[in-house]
Image 1 (tube, one colour):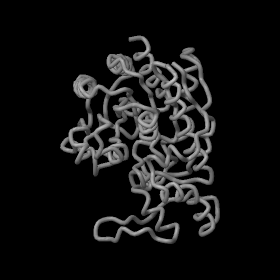
Image 2 (spheres, one colour; image 1 turned 135 degrees about the vertical axis):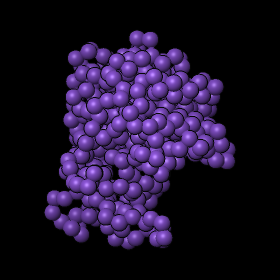
Image 3 (cartoon, rainbow, N blue to C red; image 1 turned 90 degrees about the vertical axis):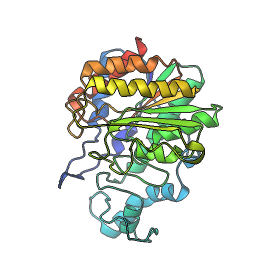
Image 4 (cartoon, rainbow, N blue to C red; image 1 turned 135 degrees about the horizontal axis):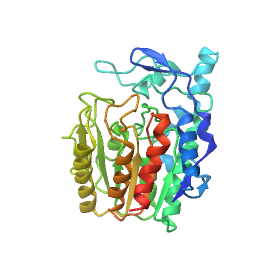
Length: 343
């Protein structure tokens, strides 16, 4: 399997995130990809290639122009107002009982376009997030050229980003942009299987009213877990999209047998949908030692998970999302891909 990877991911390296009542160095950091790349090389897993350049047009197919422009200029506006070497972070959000207007000042815009304080914007975040999109889109092109499967090793991740909203370490929705690219290049139907521990709220929102994209997500129950406000089982899509959104929320402490059953149901839904391609939002934060997640999957479970995904016999693009147990992130990610390859 070819892996697409860019060193530009290092250009996003925030200083702090707000979590559990304190500011800590972000769990989402460049070390994650260092470990994965090291494991891929150690296992001689396959060729590692740089991405092609695609510009903003594919991003505009998913995200709004005002949101893209905000991300492009946010840090410069922040620096002009505050100076110093601090990252740009929101402090106020337009929640219930407040007007939903775009403020003129950067402090207000940061809150309008985000929904948490865990996603700092740095002076070079823009270069990193556009590079991550290129990594995903290069994978699409390789599959269109005949590759059975490709691993797009994206960073920052993307599945929490909606059309005009960033958070959860995510800015541009790499998986959604790749999905739209498949459709723009001739696919009639595309399925997205989101196996990250956290619900892909941004991906769900982007495709919620569409019947050409099936979104299937296995994740922590939003009654207990981030992002809290989406990911419930009864969210099935709206309008033309009704029935094309499948959520499988599970409680803290979920073990492999329960997870496997949910994955079986998700795979059945994808088989019935008969898509032309599959995009896998690839999170391994379901692992038992993940520091910010509460499922209890073991490293060997990812081998079986990859095998199950391969049973769909679809052109498959793996797009990297979360996973924060850095000591094992390489083992778990490569186990997933190996299980797919060796099925």
